[in-house]
Amino acid sequence: MNYEDILEKLVNTNERIMIMTAENRAAIRNLPGKIGNRFIDTGITEMTLIGMASGLALRGRIPVAHALASFLTMRAFEFARTDVGIANLPVKLVGGFSGILSEANGPTHQAIEDVSIMRGIPNMKVFCPADEDDMVKCIEQVLLSESPYYIRYNNRKPEYTHSNEFSEGKAEVIENGRDINILTYGALFNEAYKAYKILKNSGYNTGLINMRTLKPVDENVIVDSLKNSLLTVCIEDHFLKGGLYSIIAETALKHNVMGKVFPFAFDEKWFKPALLNDVLEYEQLTPEAISEKIKNEFLKIKNNNGK
Image 1 (tube, rainbow, N blue to C red):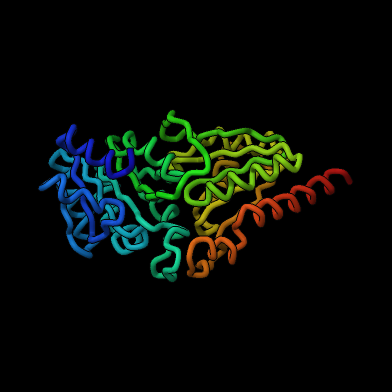
Image 2 (tube, rainbow, N blue to C red; image 1 turned 60 degrees about the horizontal axis):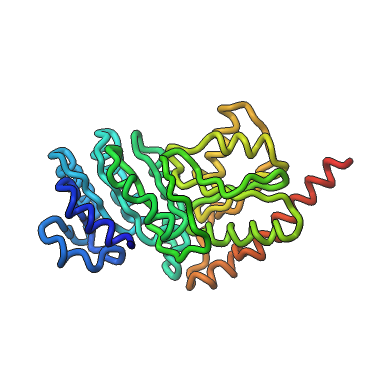
């Protein structure tokens, strides 16, 4: 069952579900002809999309609204904040082509500050599935929540079979590592997973954690990693400020813990527009490049600890 199948099933079994879009049908191309008046396309009007979704939610519906992530989170920010977040309505905002998934699009279409923006909205929760398998296994529970959600749509083919057990604010722990723990979310999970395997095969005691929801976030896994591994690595297709790196810092301060953190993120620069594999190569986000940088950082720590 894929994302469209799940939406169709929910429409047919739950009269509250409405499917909406601002003329971005990539994820829902086959639905309009199947669900009739339960589908609404507002045209390229993200503010109208969110305003209309809020109105429907006030009348008991659960609107699932799709748009390009960059415009959904930035052009329509005030509507997401005021109409959805402050009002605490069960509107689901599904951002397409977020992060590196925008591929050849330039900075105007690159949503790499979206997590930072949306987690700052009162009541808004943030779900960032690792790939299509992770999204399909978790999405129904997210969509049926009575809370507002921002969802980073992700249809990358999986490299790993994810757990069926999903709970908001609970990370998926693939393994805990004593030497290195990799914390990640979203579209770079595949690269993080392959880097994790390279490191394990090289003799490093390495862990991998799929954060899944960044708001609420699993503070326990962050604290545990900072306390019990020599190096905590965070990998994200987001700006350094405001994403997982910032969340780790906030959590460390809140719980009064210290640890070495090594981030992979975009530091106040957008990525080079290209096809996905070329983006990963150019930005040194391939599993080989990631694992090599982690090895070097870990060896520096080991050498410093040995002095």
